[in-house]
Length: 192
Length: 95
Image 1 (tube, rainbow over the protein chains, first blue to last red):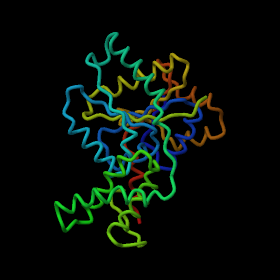
Image 2 (tube, each protein chain N blue to C red):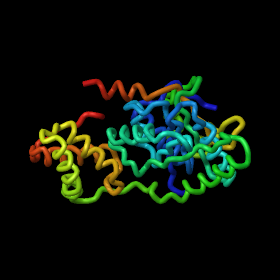
Image 3 (cartoon, rainbow over the protein chains, first blue to last red):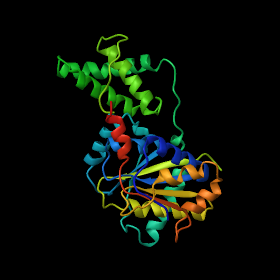
């Protein structure tokens, strides 16, 4: 079995995935232990993120995972939470649950990434302004970071927006400029 | 072959059975005759640089790549690497 001394740099990683996409119907990547900026090439390449959780577990870690994805401008629509079977790899029940999961994944239509739509910034601004007004009621001197957080959270929940992080970053910049009164001026958003 | 799909698996704790579930999914699809590849991050060992072998497969057929990546005891492909895309991060930080 071939083994790699490190994950290739972004260009090589993309070429590696291009090669494997031509050869395989399915590529499954077991992600790193923690979701950090170092894992962005994996997020960018993924059609779907499976989140494994214990059936009775607290939802806070899942919430944290979603918040991290929002920070990296990965839409929440690509996350599919899966409860880990109790027998953990042994027995008929596990095999049956895996068979059902494989079936669901094959049929999951959400895996088709949405394409960019025109006038998306105007639509997003109209949708996000009520959220910002709500935040302003709590804190009249709304900080840029809080505004960005609100817009990021809204972006992450919207599955109809373009899927690529680059496109979402551009939309975020435009919306931030708009709602913060900077007009066409460009700002760069942290988190990349 | 239908359009290739890539799924990444994450969990709230590292000890959770991502690896077991990944291999179970791969085994199921492989038994249906579908071509599956598993890429495992943070593998315990790794000894090949992708920069050395990826260029060799640019002009070769997908079948040869599948043969190259075929696991010794599995009916699907496996690829291990040690850690994060560190070079990517370093490049991102450079001016």
